[in-house]
Amino acid sequence: MTTAASFAVASGADVFVEPIKETRPDFKELKAIEKQRREILLRAELPFWRILLFWSGTCLKEIATDSLVWTTLIVYVGIRIYANLVECVPESVTLLQKTNVGILGGFLSFFLVLFVNQTNGRFLEMYGFSKACSGRIQDVAGLAKVQLPIEVADRLVRHFNAAHIAGYVGLNAIGQGSPYSKAYFFDHYNEEAKLLTPQEMQALSHHDMDHSGLSMDGMYDYTDQPPHFFYIHFLVLLSALYLPLFAIDTAYAAGWGAEKSVGLDILQGLIVFLQCVFVVGLRSLATNMIDPYGDDLEDLSVINYVEGTLEICSIIMNAKQE
Image (cartoon, rainbow, N blue to C red; front, side, top):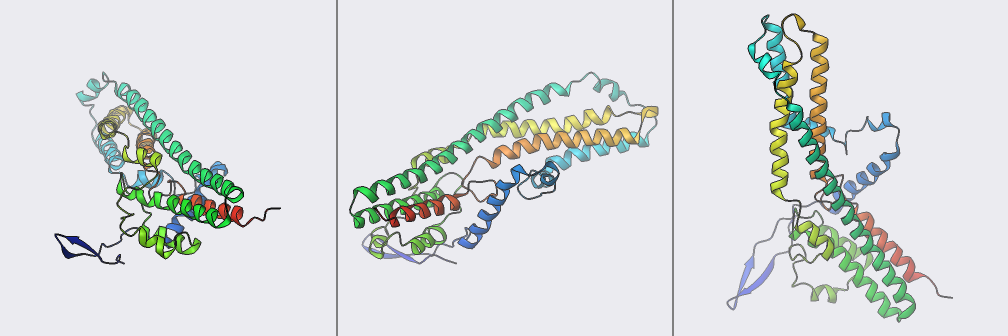
């Protein structure tokens, strides 16, 4: 699918601009993602045993595909295989008993929890921006309905709703980009709700809605400035160093010589895996919340906000005054 070819004037001559291929999800795909998001939100109140049975919207996919988890487990399994093949106790076992990897784990846990808390705060604040925007548009619709002539009120509310939808499209110009495009998102609602007339659309034709950054201020500010890469790199580096060290420390502590035990090997391996779940899970949770307006299943339900606002505005504008 390509957008319509456009013409630009440069040095007095018409210059043909190559069609830009639209790679973002179409409206059908966006609706499918939205449906899954709403279903995931309803899972929070399910019994624990049912929650454990889900795959989508959980940390399991991130953990299963993370190379650091597999590297850590391979390190542990490799050392334990070697320990079960030899009868002697290596001198390195005594030396490793003097180390304390737990100190590094304590620091890493603190920074990971702090990172999750910061990104969760950003996520909830941007959720607040989205809901507040919808609320203000509904307030405008209510005031316009009773204070202005019906034609003026209708045009004002239509323009506010158009600006609301265009604001999400404009996020594509900053940060991680946005899956909401003019072709598949704005144009769909514009045609469905008759927000802008052909003449009004023509007046806006010189604006590149997808790349102009014409988004809502609060959302723009937060999306344009994600958490510092320095901090994220610091956490990733600590994780990459800590988990293999933890696997080595745990593997050497699981017993050598006459103290070897298959049951203890399995138990210690489970502890290594749980530590991977903790570290990688928290890191993935935080990074998934950095961009709430993306196409992840954990992101905000933008379509729900837009359609809810359109529906309530329609109810207000069609209400009969007594």
